[in-house]
Image (cartoon, rainbow, N blue to C red; front, side, top):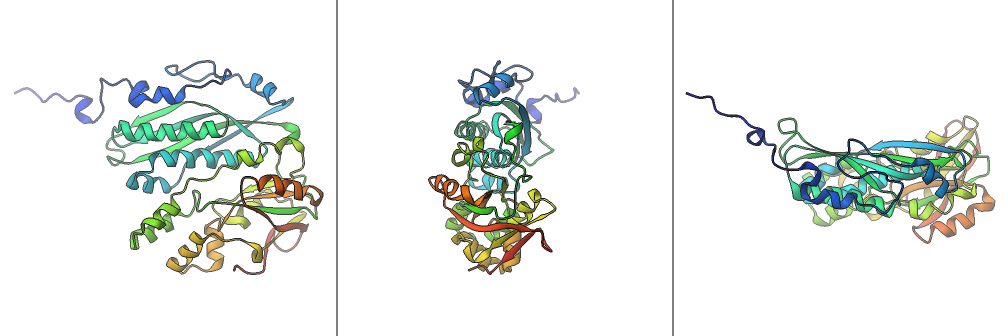
Length: 341
């Protein structure tokens, strides 16, 4: 008796399919950016970094490099059909991480690892990545779609992306220019963004609520459109993207050893979704501030003489308000004053 033939098709991988053209992925890698020097099908992507630096008026360019993934929010995206939306989450998160250092993106690579083939869902994911890249003014130049049956569950996927950005050495924003008296602006989030989802998923599991699901699945905001025209003015002395660890944990990452930051919690404009989460979970105010952004997606630090114009500009895009100031060094790096309302 002959042994049964075992093929790639029989173990879950289509050998006949052209992976580069799967589901029309190539359509989402088309770009008008002349600095992208080759297209789909090559072993790697070529990008004219020097030409892009000249276009941006950057004389002493530095690369700003960052890799990111959307955390457990992608599990909800898989379960409830937010495949396109989750691509925006990954891209916008990573854009904000290089933006707070004064950087702007030039090219992004995505990575999609799946437990089984699913052309429709894969196409939605790539479209989400591609559309988010366009909003942030850089191309999706390539990436990887890897089907790994047996390693992952059949209908699951894991996402990540790597962004190459650029900044002029003279325009780097790392907190080193912050001084006593600088003011701190809070720029509003639209919800959880991409942090706190292990807890949020548990709350949804205990009691499913469609409105709650819709609120927590809002895509992570990008702050690039609001900030891009301020980066070359050398007025902002520090920025913090508020992710895991909240305002205190993330602002502390850019604080100099001789400075502290005071945040007035009485001024914090908390979004209703966080009030809902606190009621459902019974978390303390301290735990809420550490786990979630609580309505603040970005903190911007600048000298008092510039703060009104900066606030006026950002307010054209997002709710923006004064929430604190930089002081001489105290017992803690970041100090909360007042109480949540």
